[in-house]
Amino acid sequence: MSTFQDLGLNDDLLQAITDLGFTKPSEVQEKAIPILLESETDLVALAQTGTGKTAAFGFPMLEKIDVSSRTTQGLILSPTRELCLQITNEMKLYGKYCKGLNVVAVYGGSSITDQAREIKRGAQIIVATPGRMKDMINRRLVDISKIQYSVLDEADEMLNMGFKEDITDILSHTPDDKNTWLFSATMPREVATIAKKFMHSPQEITVGNKNESTSNVSHEYYLVNSRDRYQALKRLADANPDIFSVVFCRTKRDTQKVAENLIEDGYNAGALHGDLSQNQRDLVMKSFRNNQIQMLVATDVAARGIDVDDITHVINYQLPDEIETYTHRSGRTGRAGKTGVSMVIVSKSEVRKIKSIERIIKREFEKKEIPDGADICEVQLMSLANKIHNTEVNHEIDKHLTSINELFADTDKDELIKKFFSVEFTRFYNYYQKSKNLNVAEGSRDREGGRDFSKNSNSTRYFINVGSKDGFDWMKLKDFLKEVLELGRDDVFKVEVKDSFSFFNTENETKEKVLAFFTDFKHEGRFVNVEVSENRGGGGRRNDRRGGGGRRDDKRSGGKRDDKKGGYGNRSDRRRSEGGSKPRRSDSDNGAVSRPRRSRR
Ligand code: AMP
Image 1: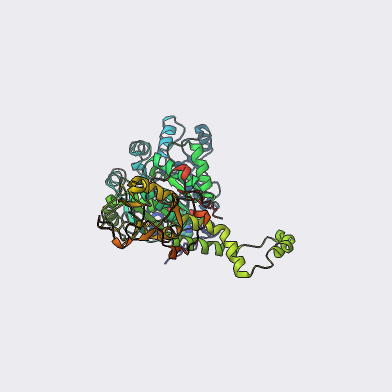
Image 2 (image 1 turned 90 degrees about the vertical axis):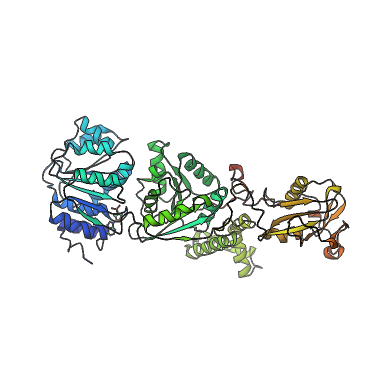
């Protein structure tokens, strides 16, 4: 492993590198810098974002240009305004000891005259987006006829964004004998064509394999029903309390909707897409950079300029249309030597795309399960415990300590801890108490449209001693059960009504609640008896031992009746389950239990 000194950089640059705290060159720097310093050559470098490629072309360019001259000698083209500003900023940091250096950013959405004035002062290096650069050339506000070095950064992205003509036009105003350095994460045919057209026998370097994802990123997928996608997203966020993520959606509409739903559900989220004004996008990005937003929901195009290094997770809420785009998405995490996770939420109909992506990125995905409510509650509890453990004591509390101590004089330590944690934890617990399993087995039938009645393994079948004689049909009985048990739309199913008795199913998790509720419940003056049935719900006959009767078993209830449960729909802790159809705004957590808001820092 070489050092920056070994690469042959001058003292001004080495000093800046020391100031920046870079201790050793990254792979792309190690490979590109010696080539670019030692020879006047064209270069094609295949490297992901976040691998240190700005410095890989930036250091040699800064070393080679003449800062005593005011002529523009270097031109760096980048796909987005954000990247353009990021590169400009990095170049200024790298060149801070290069006396007389002037690096100017040229991009749309900002005053063209101000940019022209900056250039006129003498810009040795211009960093530009293609659209604005072409505009400036047409208006003769810039002279690039003497440049010696041109960089096409994120060439694949520029071509994806339709800049091919602009790039061709811009390069036609530059000298033939300049050197062109092309950096790209992937090598689609269009990039190879550009390389062939504008470059002379370029040297090639590859960091990792073509299109390959960096080894710092692990790839996971989660198989759920389409209708559970949003719930799955929330679970993934809740299972990672310190998540700092980009959530990718396919369309602007979905992006906006998912972000709005997340915000309403108490998450620190924001939307980034092309229908927002530049000003709105800047504000969202600012909040994201400051960690005020934990979940940035974005379209592929809008996310191109995201230059944030410490993203912990990329979540593919939907897979991109072009699977090659996955490389760019996952490249938003695992930057600058950090590790990251790229998660994909897929439905049965899309799962085959995972294999195609694996082939492209040359990495394997791990199939993982959406965590269940108990897992999430544990993670949240331990995260809270750690936060409390690491919290600095605020001594303003000291003066109130006597009163607080008096209040808790009879509470022992364990009890106090439990009470203290319950303040926060109970909300998560209540929310996830009845959460269902969102995972779909790989070989199973896709059940986008509704509950899969063919599978009984997770559900319990009950016998109930009311039937059509009591005025119930299956719909009325389902509504009745949902109401008294305070369950969600799909939580009671397979309702079968007979004359004087009926059957119904719930998920296994609800069993205790159902049985406890019906120990002493009266309907129209008569005790209602519910028992677990041996009938698995295949339309079979009821177990006759339980037939007829309609009388409650007094032994089981002990003859007592809790008045609170006497009627139905009168319980104060009314809540619905996490499940059900698409989450509604007014029903954000599908219940009256609001999810705790969190801030990352
Ligand atoms: P880039 O791929 O150029 O966008 O760089 C990603 C991040 O890595 C930037 O924040 C750089 O400042 C940082 N970086 C670049 N080179 C190094 C290095 N050799 N050591 C540590 N960080 C670096």
